[in-house]
Image 1 (cartoon, one colour):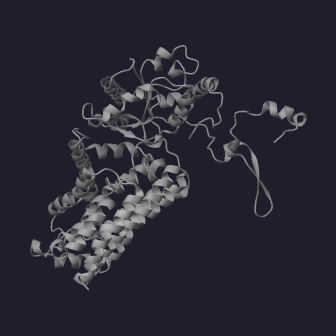
Image 2: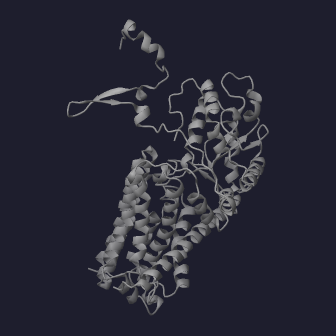
Image 3: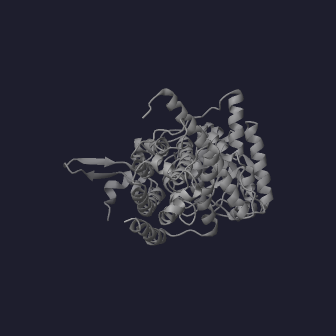
Amino acid sequence: MDYSLSRFLYTLLGLFIVMNWGMLMSSTMRRIIARVSGRIGIPWYQPWIDLIKLYSLRSQITHGTMFYLGPVFRLMGGVGLFLFMPMIYGSAYFMNYSFSGDLILILYFQFFGMLGMALGAGEGGQPYSAIGISRGLSQFTTIEVPMTLAVISLAIQYDTLSITEIVKAQQGSIANWTLFTNPFATIAAMLSLLGAFGHSPFNLVKAPNEIPIGPPTEYHGTFLGVLRTNGAILHVTEAALFMNLFFGGATSWLELILKTFFIYFWSVFVGVVFPRFRIEQSVRWFLKWPTLIGIISILIWM
Amino acid sequence: MKKDFDKDALSDMYKDKFLAPENEIRFVNAPDGSIIEVNPLDDYFCQERPKELKPRKGVVEKFLNWARAESLWVLGFGTGCGSIEIPPLSTPRFDMYRFGVQMRATPRQSNVFIISGYLSVKTLKRAIRSYEQMPSPKYIIALGSCTINGGMYWDSYNTINRLDHYLPVDVYIAGCMPRPEALLAGFGKLKELIKEGKAEKANEYIQNLDWYKANQKKIIKDWNMPDYNW
């Protein structure tokens, strides 16, 4: 792996682009949701203003060390996901620090932020945080099942655990995409993606208006600013993970922006159509259809 | 439990009879046999007096004030009957999101507290707790006539008349009830005040904390919370 300074700086630049694209994407999606319900919606630059305001609050309180570390762990989950993800295939600058076993590490990083957040929000002492955490962890555990099955199926299909190798195998034509060569794994993963992005019907974790804000109920100011920064990074990187695994990766930033937009849009599209699941409904749903399809996707490669 | 009156008569007289049982001083046996005193008001709450937080100077504060004005997060706490005017703001007809106004469900993440109508004595206590938990700079919009002089509840036995004796108000919206349009106009006014740097009521509250606390304690008999709810 290349540990030079220029590689480090290019990775930082990539992180900056990804963060800003994530914020623009989230405001665009909120505008789309608003249009569906007949509103105009927030201005496209609203996430940046919110961030400036959050970082400029004058008074902040803390509940202890873990309360500080919660958002830091969460940010580490998002940045870690980004660091080991090849963003632009074939680019000398934006391959980041991907290596031969990065797929396993990335699956781990997906869960890492949630666990850190659980510890931090737990120290806040707010009962709604505790409810949000228990719901979030139980739902995310079931999301991981179809996702992991799909990844195992891909590992059997391509005989590798390197994301770069998987992207490489999909180059050439659209017919080489995993979407067409391994549709069952794609379906299982795209269904688990609905839960990972936390839009309706699987938005019970943050459940606005029901359990106030979920895990970050006690977080404010800079803490919340870090969490929102991470949210922007995480959304793009997770979409980029699915893009790399199933939709042929990206060879330019424009392609990455288009593909991540449509992958994220898929969860928004489902979200504006369906109302919210209760937690036991969503857990059962993930363990039923996506898991079955995931098992089939492995069986056909046996 | 029957108490020995003669023995405790004097101390009972000075005891806070509104102190909740869970906040009373108690003694706990530790596993090693020692006895630990637990004073919940000191151990579980922060008793520190808040300090005035001065704004920055010059262009920086202007820029930050612009950001604060364009990103108003409203605490979704319906205190009086006027709270029925708040939900229409998120409908297509009024759509407050256009103006950077968003609803938050927790005081920790909110900047604007809408006191929507009358405040009963019981709600006043909750309103104070919520207001003090919000991070500074914070703003209060008082909605409806009841917050100005009591309105139709002027001679009620259980509501307060003038809100600004208990909490600092930035913007009043008069009417009974004001329509959502009036509320949007109120947000516009608040934005103007913030951009001009005149919405510093959070600091005024801390400067005159003793006066506000005296007023509040005159009304709220079962205080049962720390002086300032961090």
